[in-house]
Length: 181
Image (tube, rainbow, N blue to C red; front, side, top):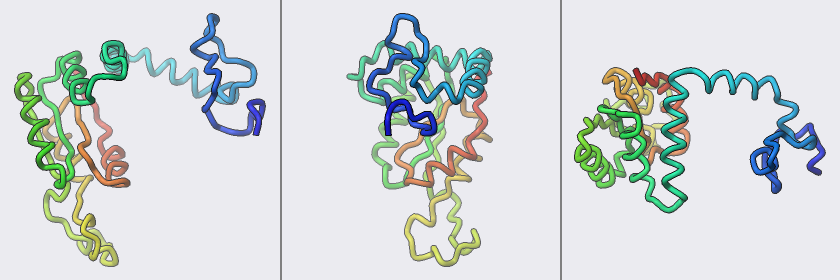
């Protein structure tokens, strides 16, 4: 495949001219030219107050990072930039020690922490209508409940701490409310 193949939705460009060139325009060979409607919709979405606030904080934290700060330091900085007072941790039970450390670090910053470990509620595979999965240890994980509980607690910012592949996707799908008011 060549860079000129506009039928491929692949934004892996060695030139990266869209942000490195002085004119800040997409080159003619760029696949993004086939997604102009989506790009314009994204620009409108960025202008919404809740996204301005979130994206601004993300850029400020990124500017300080330069790729060398630990992720948890970035997370603490990000929460402070947003003036968060309530954060949630959707954690895998296997990361108990790490979760305790994270809780302690956020609390030291004056931030209230709500934590839900993955098997919360003890819902079995059979109760989910999936008896064929009962033999798998991670079938006890409950990412939907994790998301719903953190939503109920009205956390302002939530972090995923080691959720299994796929469970993290289920969590993100359910965890759609991001109330930064």
